[in-house]
Image 1 (cartoon, rainbow, N blue to C red):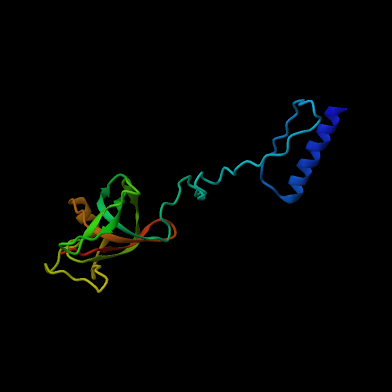
Image 2 (image 1 turned 180 degrees about the horizontal axis):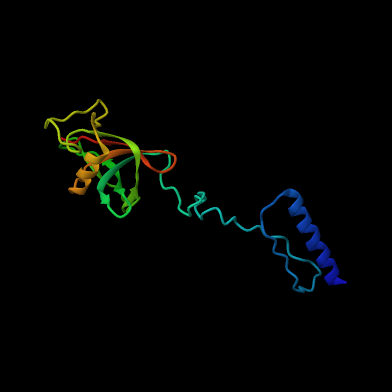
Length: 182
């Protein structure tokens, strides 16, 4: 009789989950605890979500910075994946000059993202060969347009300036602007 009651409880719980459209799994205990009660259903986390709560893309990779504007220290170009390498940066004021950017100790490590096919690249002084004088806006960002080929060439040659990246919703770099530092 006890087994039949447990079976009915489990069947009722499954029906309730099915009617509610729940995508969770059910964990009903059939062990005899001596008090005649069965344990309640346990909802499992969906395998489509990562432990941090971010959704996993269909390729199995998580988006790192979709829709973000980032201040970074450029670290090179990964030839095997065709991606820009960078470290997240933070501004550190200094009493003797205008200060500068350093790697963010709260997010160590090197990240990498691809450029969009039509990425907007703006140089202040170093990204692309030019007249030799700095061209910057009121925000301290470069204003001279560069091709992505010039920018990648700069990275391949060891360029490591601070830059501001704008990342699109699919985690590709849509624009790069050199942060000018005298």
